[in-house]
Amino acid sequence: MAQFGNWWQHSEIRCCDAVLLKLGTDTEVDMPTGDGRIVLVAGATGLVGREIIAALLADKSVDVVHCLSRRPLALKHPKLHVLVVDFAALPSLPKVDECFIALGTTIKVAGSQAAFKSVDLDAVVAVARAAKSAGATKLGVVSAMGANAQSRVFYNRIKGEMELALTSLGLQCLVLARPSLLDGNRAALGQPERGGEDFGLLLARRLRVLLPANYRAILAKDVAHALVRAVKAAKPGVVTLLSGEMQGA
Image (cartoon, rainbow, N blue to C red; front, side):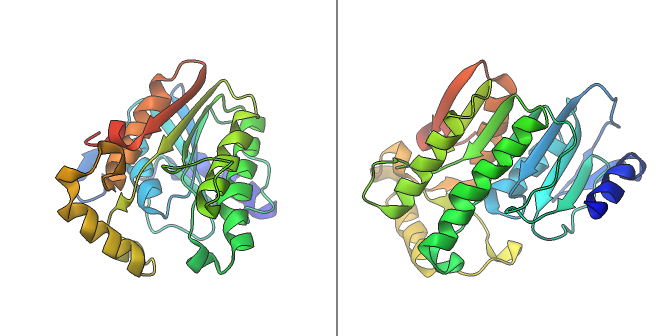
């Protein structure tokens, strides 16, 4: 809590340190006006999370992006405030208007089904609850194609249970993005190689024209942009974005 207090106390000072964002190209950024959107993001170190952060920082209607992360981020930006947290014991959060969650792992990386569930279900729901308590009325979450709480496939069942848990929170707007196999440079993020996934991507790219739109590999950037736009425009209720709808977003 002391670490959080220091972070929050100095957030306005850091907000005025620079006016340019370096994310492949120089992007001009307006200084916060004080009346723009305040957004919370969890999972910024992943393929989709990285692109969500980039899209929000470039959005002139967003004044502040609070990022929850397990470790410090190298990215610096006047709008960005990073809080290193334990997702199993989240601190109280500053007031936010909306939230994006792109947390996720694999059973191989996590080490067990229980560890996988603690990230892809428990941590996601914990962040959503904390965001709601902090005032968020809109929530955008990265789920997966095949999410189904009744599925015999463990991965799909956990994703389905996560979606049901989020729906039960009673948020004003909930947007669920269900991408197919994600295409992106994991090595650039320092993530371990996923042999089976790499093979699947290679196969999906070669068979792309033969596959239904919802089952084609999709760029992480497309998922992020589609989710950010959908949350921004969301009306009350639950919206599900299928992978085919997000292609080329």
